[in-house]
Image 1: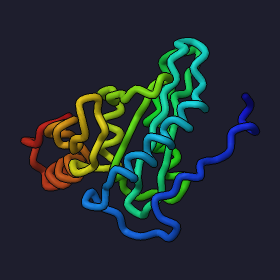
Image 2: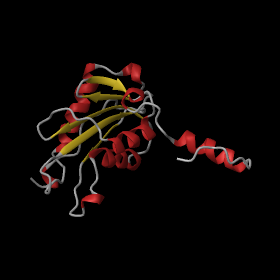
Image 3: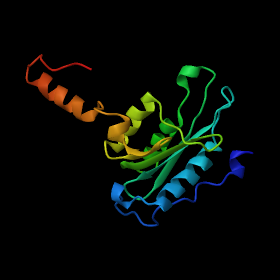
Image 4: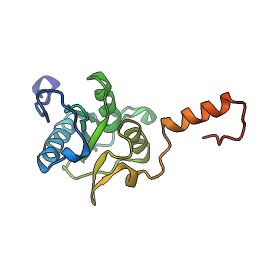
Length: 169
């Protein structure tokens, strides 16, 4: 199958951009995310591991973004599906992630690795809901006490005041 054979996603939560929050999540929303994650997984480039992964997320303006793992012979530069999902987020207009789902090549739900949890937290925050193998939970449960952009702003302000007591991360 070539990329020309696979059509772009037709999954849309809303035709018009409208604010979306965690309170708007329904089983239909999760079904759309699962379908889009499966579609994305079919585009994975996994010649070394033979372990394709697809991810999809609902954005706060109603868009659904997606990504697939993209392997590289130099394994350290391999991109997880969540990385390409965040690229899709910014390439299609930015925003905040509200809900997230991830699947393997058999369609089973996957938990994001630690690096990807941090990446998702940065673009979804504590309230983003993740579909995990044991159920749907907020990011605050998946990555408790996460380090994020607010920590850097506080540290920069503290350093600017001449204090050296701020913890370094």
